[in-house]
Length: 624
Image (cartoon, rainbow, N blue to C red; front, top):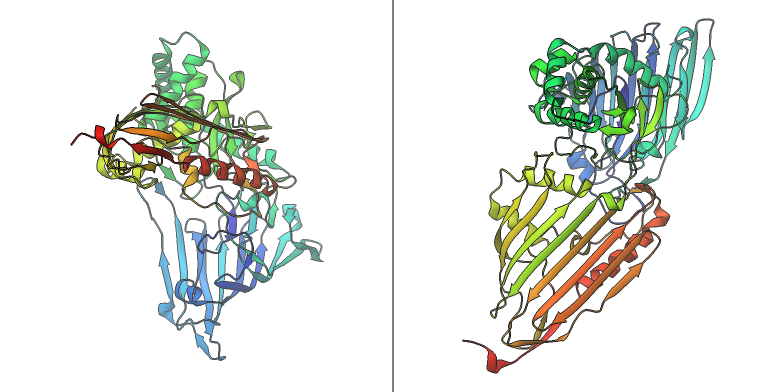
């Protein structure tokens, strides 16, 4: 679903294992030096020369990171490694040998994505802790840019050490470059009658550990962009110039639109019919060769081939809607965890996706998200700024509301005299919870049912068997339901007095899943937070030979953004349990200051779920 936008975006990422604390640490490599020199001509072609020195700091770095890798698009760029060497800890230098350079990736495809990107990798010899790996390469971008559309951008990860990073750019004054940056220092260092030279530097000597669910660092980390776009509306206008001519209402498109909407009496039902047809019938295939990452294909081409990427989906849906008199526009958006568009001169990032917006209904649609019912959005694009290209204005996708993302799970269980359980679950899901369930169920279609059931039970240390039934994941015009019939092996010994934890069984287990992992102790970075309303109801039929002496205590817990309620009732041999968790945040971007509230809520939920049911046994009534 991602769109590859036409810019060189270099994000220096450091790969290492996620850990539980947000605190400074020593990564396996440190970047001692990254110096870029970029010479741009009047047509937007440029030559970029990069010198890079990385220092290996530990055994993981020596084993896994003893290389430098560089990417380029073969239809627009060439890349050549000029020199490389490994300076060993004792000062000995091992110079580049021809077999150090490996090339891969040209024409690579996974069957759904086709590109023209090639990766050139220098694999250094005799890498050890303390090695200093040096490389120098030159990239030539030989494809001229359209007037007014030049941009080149760089980002810096908070998870790496960068001791000396500089970017020097020499460009013709006629390009009228604009600069936007965060965290860099610099400006103009030289000027002639025809050219201007900029230099920006940054030093980052503290690295921070990764945090699960952290927002994209484009929202807060250092960046540097050279561009001709004065703001994101300019980016939208650039896209619109390329995409608008592709929206053609041909005779075939008009005929199809009329056929699909013939039985739809209202505008909303007409839009729904067209959306569902495109979502179900246009297979996702992305081709980013040359300008394919930015320029969509023609609507007639998409219809005849029955495939396309996000841009193509939007073009075809726009043509179908226009055929019945409904106007729409492409909406550029981030698919991921970025929630901001920086003010000022703009590069394409973090925009990487295109969806449809219908002004008359104030409605966003994403037909590439094949598991998303009409009128809903995947959680990857909810509460995000958008660029509404045909309207020449900014917008925002809807906020996440708990009442629109709901799960009601009802599980009936019978506890047998041998401690085993027979059970049944029926669940209703809406919104993002439904969408994610559809995605998970679709991914499991190639797995044996036994494995799927075991994976669900494993979460809560339960063992058993069962069958799951659900609405077909891609049947997005049908109400989605989820259910199961299952058996659990003995959860406790019922021949003597004891206790048991209320089992989850083969059910979604949404609330219970909060209790099975240790969250981060603290957060340094903003993080993604969802708003949902989930409720689990259990009825447990108890055997006659046990008597319940202690039940878990009812819970009524509430903070500013979180409410958790649990109730327990015993009526003869029937136990009734109800647990409800409602989380409503003002946005999907939460600050570290809000995190302790979630930590405390998890503690409350965990304590409740682990509260035992204590029973005694009437041995005379046990049937042998």
